[in-house]
Image (tube, rainbow, N blue to C red; front, side):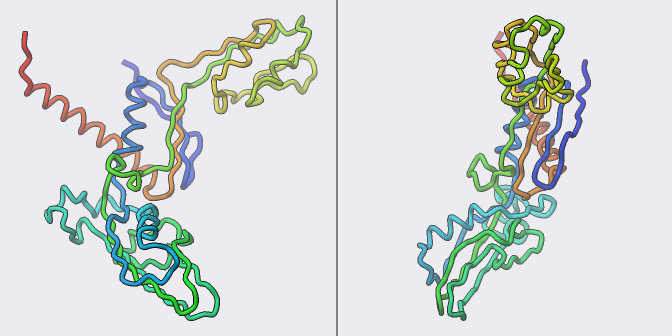
Length: 280
């Protein structure tokens, strides 16, 4: 049995790219689906607007608040359906955010996500400069918002990542010795949309060393090479994952929670399978 291995290619606060080897395409897709739809995160679920002098309807402001990404603490808070309060709202499953702003200037005033005050400093907007609404002179806005944990299966506002996809690990076999008789030796280098073939030496094209990082397996080089010097394929059970985050959770937490959910699903499946009556 092949052991799974993982290599991180790029990582920062908002982006993670890694190569995983030794898993099936079914498992790769299961990981992607769990990350995109089943990781719990915080989002505004209820809004009470006490005062709104802005030109926007209450519903528009409430929608903007609900789609605003919030930092999440999975160690402290529970999903409402798992909380002892039964989802009515308590300090273990709910966080309140308030906003009270009066424009005392002579010019329009922009209200940002940073104007929201949270009763938990761990649960705040990921960016304080998200515009919410603009008010004119002497206008006032008073808002109460309540955020809870949820999953993207129920609503996209609870999505833990901005984007996630995986692709096959490319493998290109390029025999440039066949290019010596080619009437147009730089044809392939011009055709490749990712510029994976270098023809700077003016003798024959050379495949760049890290071609697999950007190759999209479009097969244009293989299909159009007049000398059939290129064969494009992919490495079995090896995938390149790219995850983009808006900052609601660290990538370490996302990956850890993903496999916790994955193992829970396997345990649930085994339990139901054992309890099922199988007819012979």
